[in-house]
Image (cartoon, rainbow, N blue to C red):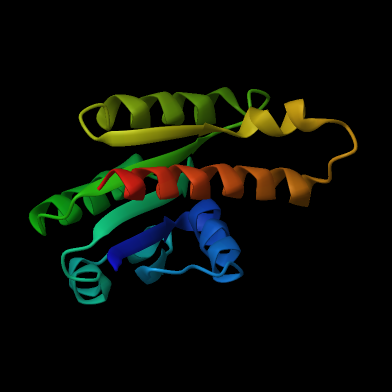
Length: 152
């Protein structure tokens, strides 16, 4: 049985965890850990993460890049193999948010980083609800995690 911890950081990450809670996941020792941006605490993370697990961190571009880096540093200190999945802001969002995204990509360039494009929702058709669009993004994240787990 594979040991997996998925950290949902901030709103986008926590929404993904809520999506996962509805799925039937087999053959996984799975821990879902929601963390609001302001609640990054090494002791909590160390206590909550499954020992020897593969860690995935899912987040959107929200507040402070330093918080994302702090979490990354904590995971490194704990010698955990981790992959980061970041949701790229929509192209119509504020330039500051898009710049934050670029900064995150730069800071995480030496890490395992998967970028999910929010703009994919626009290509799915006009009859798709926002909820269904974001569920498609959740499906894409889930498929990426399954693929990564199949490699190990």
